[in-house]
Amino acid sequence: MRQGRIIWTTCSLITFIVCLIACSKSGTEKQAAGTHALAFTIPAGFPAPVYRFEQTNPLTREGFELGRKLFYDGRLSKDGNFPCSSCHQQFAAFATYDHDLSHGFNNQFTVRNAPALSNLAWMPALQWDGGINNIEVQPLAPLTAPNEMAEDINTVIGKLKKDAGYNQLFTAAFGKGEINSQKMLKALTQFVGSMVSADAKYDKVKRGEAKFTAAEQTGYALFQQKKCAICHKEPLFTDFSYRNTGLPLNPSLKDYGRMHITNKREDSLKFKVPSLRNVYLTFPYGHDGRFYSIEDVLNHYSNGVQASAMVDSLVRNRIPLTAEEKYYLKSFLSTLTDTAFVANKSFSQPQ
Image (cartoon, rainbow, N blue to C red):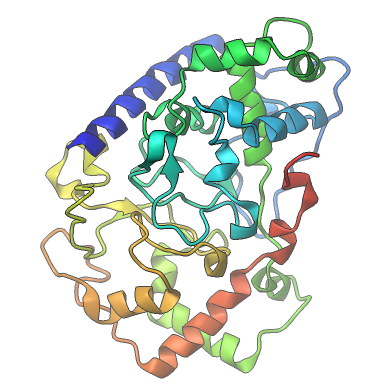
């Protein structure tokens, strides 16, 4: 139950801070004087985002660049070795490459597979269990978790205040005034919230700029036919729901997912439906990274679902797939790779 306590304690802390932030807001906030506004463009076909920069956190070049520096700075962790980017690597679409669980402070491991970071502004809740419903405070979860960055927010702010460079960056982004946690979290949000992935081949096909191959088109049709699209709803390729997909409990982690948040038995082993965007880059898969290939995931749905009363009705009877159908589905899923996103230097480590 240690993992459960870590998750519950962290979520409780963040819920408290969300309330403080909410109480401090009154209407639309103004852009700091002297900053340069950045446009947040909603891609064609995308719904309106949940997080609205213009309402609570005006997006500026200065705020974005401050958030970028913070994202790659190991000093946000206790021993300096674990920046946000250590678990969220750009070449892996900001997931953890080739590791089921990520490394954390003092040779520990995280208790869940690090999710990819993209299109976060559209997410009504974050984490595998939906335990955080405000993107601005999401960084506090890994920052304060003893098995991840293992730091204290006051200590982090103290480090930043001692750095002349950071004092200049915070002043440039938010005007004169002390460095504080709210400004730090807003800057991080400007950076990660700007990570929009919407230029894969799939998107180009939808815009009329490209065409699927015969195999990709067949896979797309199967994606609809096999009801994959119900949970992995276009264009974000998730419906943000929490579902029990018939995975047996990981005996070493004992992670019951959504039930940690709601305390409802019917939420046992429910985890958030992940987006399939850049899925070829974000392996391994699942909340605990138990699947090391897309083939493994398809095999699970085809013949590995462990039926129970709490397993989602869409997969309770499994989704039978032939080898040929798996080939076509994988062909379609490959069109969700956004090479421009993972090569975008705006999101890379600042030099």
